[in-house]
Length: 166
Image 1 (cartoon, rainbow, N blue to C red):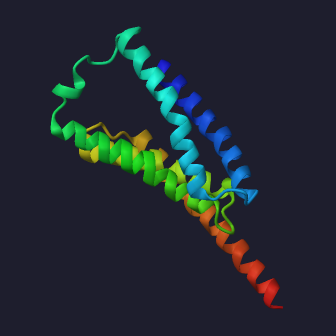
Image 2: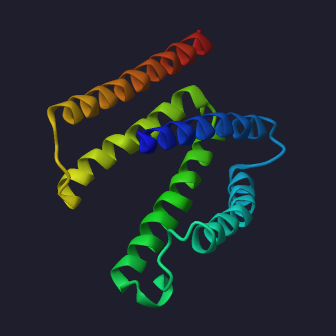
C-alpha cells in the first residue's frame, strides 16, 4: 500500500508541475530546452540531499555501490534512468508542449499513459514479471484511451483547417 501512495504522490506532483511548465512555455518567454535545463538544474540539489539522507540517516542505500555495482547496472542507470527517462522523455514531452496544438490535456495523458502500459509489457517480456488478465485489460484500456485522444485531436485539427480554408 505504501508503494501505491508514493505512486499517487508522484502522479500528483507531475500533473501539477507540468501545468506550471506548460504555462511557462505558453508565455513564449522560454523555450522547451530552457525548461529542460531549469528542471535538471533545480532537481540536482534536492537529489543530492535525498541521497545523503538515504545513505547516512536512513541507511537504506548500499554503501559501496560506486565500486561494487557491475557494469550492467551502470549501463541500465545511465541509459535507462539518465538518458531515456531523465533526458529524452522530458526532451520530447517539453518539445511537444511547445508545439502548436501541444495541449497538455492531450499530450500528458498520451505520454504518461503510454509509460505505464510500456512498463507493464516490458516488465512481463524483459523482467519476467507476471502478466495477469487485469494488467492486460488495463493496458488495452490505456492504449484505447490514447487512440481516442489522438482521434479527437485529429478530428479537431481537420475541422479547424477546413473552416480556415472556407
